[in-house]
Length: 139
Image (cartoon, rainbow, N blue to C red; front, side, top):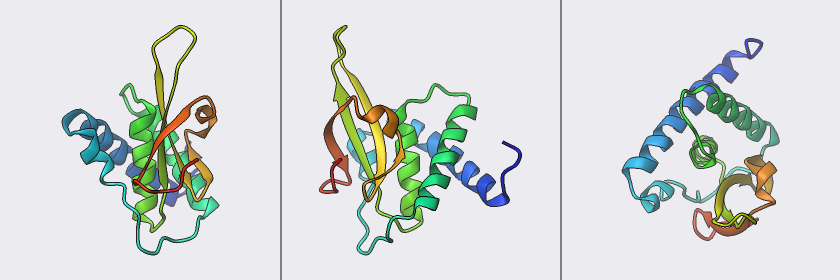
């Protein structure tokens, strides 16, 4: 992890802050209020694979190094916020799966104009319930 540029480290620090904020916000605020921060911009920038890759690296690295038990949702929120801050219009998708053992599992993943950003490896097992911001493109 030491062979990264100063820009990478700035992304990493931003991802740490955003994940911690999301983790706390999900515990202290109603879910609807937290996802209301995901908004569609009037003129989003076209998808940029380099930015998506940089955000993915930063969020995954931060999640591995933070001393918390993190689920996919704080990571997806952090990735979405980071992309929004750069003028992109990411879509956070939320889905469920019913395992054979009973109960249910939930998962969140992020796409940028259909391009996978984070959480996409597990997403194929889940049935999409909704996307944020509301009215955004679905998977």
